Structures are given as structure tokens and as C-alpha cells.
Image (cartoon, rainbow, N blue to C red):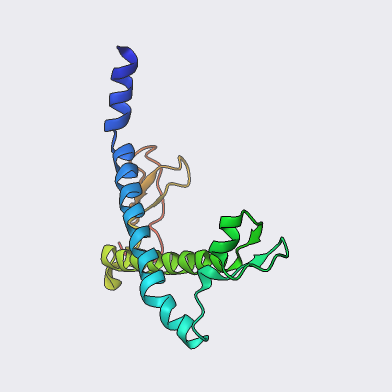
Length: 155
């Protein structure tokens, strides 16, 4: 029973739930991007390149000269499917670019441009006890040593 309780605590922890949601959304997003690549982007590219479907490009390693990838696979011939590799690389590049755009947009929403700069420090270190004291302090509140006010802090 203790292991079930421990597992429940692990599964209900925020990080595990966030990870699960991320994986589910990532899988769905991958399906959408794959469809975008296969059904929207690649057909015009294939048309421009002479009606080429990258997924069907292959090298027959058996030397039998199969006319299509499906025929070679059906016969059990060894093939080098470089078209599938090209397709997978394009899928990856599009997913990576889409994730980049999403992260970029999220970062812009998180920190508006006017608020990206940090506020100037309001404290400094006491030279004697190394505690944080206000910039305009003339005496450290921790060690009671007299200190000079920071330059430009005013009196």
C-alpha cells in the first residue's frame, strides 16, 4: 500500500502532470505538422521538382531493379529509403521552426518590451560584515559599522 501512496504522490505532483500534458500535446502537434508537411507543403514542392514524391525515392540494394518502393518492400529486397529520410528531416525542421515561433511569442507575452530591463539595485554590501544594506545607509544595521553612502545615492 505504501508504494501505491508514493506513486499517487508522484503522479499528482505538478511536474509529472505538466510532463504528461506536454507529451500529449506534443504528439498531437506532431501529427498536425506531419499532415501539414505531407499534405500541404510537399505536394507543391514535388510538383515544382517534376512531380516527385520524396517518400517514394529509394535505392534498390539488391540490384533487381524494382519499379517502386512498395514492390521492392513486398519482395523483401533491401532498400535505401533516402526519400523517407528527406521527408523526416523536413518534418523535423518544420516542427523545430514552429516550436521556435511559439516559444518566441510566449517570451514576448511574458515580458513586455518596456519591462525587460532590471530595476537599479537598491542595496549594497557592507564592507565589514558583507550584509545587504540600503544604498543611502551611513551605518550598517547588522554590525553597526559606519559606512560611506554609495556614490550617486544621495544623502
